[in-house]
Image (cartoon, rainbow, N blue to C red; front, side, top):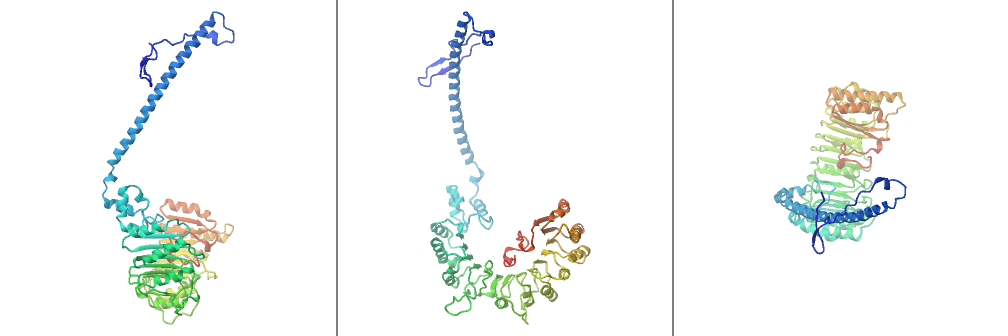
Length: 517
């Protein structure tokens, strides 16, 4: 049966059937085309007729294909347009479009710091999505209160900062300003700093990491009225040894008109530059920084309400005969454990310091506190191997213990054999394990250590262990088994105990002493 296809010319729209004319070529005997023999005189017309009709048939097929291609293109185009329209109509029914403004605002808040660390400080991206999102973002002053500047990363114009400050209304500002300590401020950075200082009465939390030249610009602002300031952090390469004060005053920073200030940190990163500050000490809850021994002691005497304290101590002084009482102190971090002998801390729960047994033992024996956490890092001295056991014996309530120095075999033996009396409440243990795979003694160290961990996990309160050191693969199989049983185990390969990383979950960043870590 012959095919039938109505065809409309795309130019004149005349309709006709492509197959009104018979264009099917007659079949030719295969013995003509499948051999290399010349055709006979009678076969030549047959071949010519096949070629002629075959070409006609080919042209008809090409016309049909062209027609179908044209029709397919139109159908695909119509389908795509319809799909886009359907998508737009479906979008109109999206629950997100009908979501109340209050819920969207709450969602947007979680895209910003501190809920989303590392994200842009203001909802610039969110506000560019659509008119509604922009209106919601702009209507929330709390979204625009974090001002961040970093001259290593920044490419933002002063206009953008002005816009953000305008949108933040009259809410307290959270400011982070970072510039190269050892360089000079760029013109753009200086304009931004000027802009930030104009709004100093709205400062809520501020952090300045700036070069020395900024001192004269920043000091009058900080010494002015700061009615909303809660947290102040300063890192500047300036110390008490610099003769910068034209009035001859001892205090480089005099900050007493800040009625709600409760947290101050200064020169924690620039720990080689001790500063002196005059602060509203009695209202402080958190204090840390770099200064001289006696300066720190004088400050602590005026700050009885401290809860957290981290001190970088630059020099040495004799122990005071009248220890400073800090009745509310919960967490303490020191660059020198000898400073402990000048303190009385009945409520202390966490201690972070260098491993020096003499001052630590003396402190623990004189205190009534029930220490929950002790973190000690490596020291340059060669301690008595049994000192660590004595320290831990003095802490029956200890739940978190971290020893970032090579564990002596004497302690490991005691840790294994005295699980019921040596740190019986221990839940979390971090340590540096210095294993020499060619040493017989270290083979005992490895076995005793793992036996202690396994025993305390299976029959005690121990829940997690973190091990730092070289050659730890030789204990990997036993740790893998503990993991299958549900214990939290982590291994960090390090050659030396004084170059450890990944410590933030053990030592909170605000309590880290950067000069020894």
